[in-house]
Image (cartoon, rainbow, N blue to C red; front, side, top):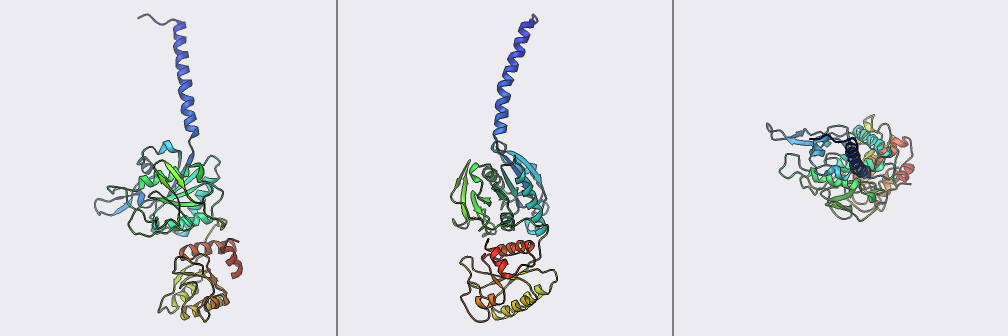
Length: 361
């Protein structure tokens, strides 16, 4: 075979170079055109598999294994992974919330980041979602997701949920809608999210009032943009705020015990109806208020505004006279988070100031 001439060789090099010039910019443009989504993993059922010896689900999957189980995920967005912790969400503590919120804050602050996905267990997912909602900064989407079934299940829901969360975080219209919990195709606002079924994959799909959109295949459909007035700075630490339930037969002893703990900085009481408590609980609240402890009264009722409509000791009017606060947030777990942040921001604030702050004023 005759060796190619200089001219022929140069033509081959030039042709190869032109081919690269055609292919590489197209690839580079595709890569550059993809949104950047930061995925922060914290553990949860989604990262668990069944131990064959015990038959019980245990933590086992790192971020790489989670993402590799979702075909085509890298086509949706460029992914930046932060493996923050590996914890079952039943063991999540307020100190962990601060770590997760700090990681979200750092991700959002990166100008290259378009959205953030937090992978978390469902047991306390509504808590971290609401905490991130109240400490959010900017307009970038923050999506919390996980799964109800571990990765060993014949039909695991984790891969779909992770796909949907990344798809949502990469969606240009997701900005400004606050923090969401996205599972089973439902986009649920963290403002109203709650776990309502112990085993069903649609555990956060309790009703359209909490849904602000859906993810269907490769499409994100939006239906609402929630009001998001209440925002707090992210503190360095969170105060201790126990929750005490009132019930027929309550003696108030549990509230007294909570108030006696030197670490307690405030108390949330789960009362009745539109903001009432039993007489023994009223007396315990009076003792706590005499010590200067803020007391926030929420309700066992899921919806409806609390107000001082009833007289007598234990009625809402008598509670306000003690300096207790009728919560603008019925859900006691969310009310607790809001009170913790309000106290972290202003430890010595008067009840009226705390009440106004919790109203987002």
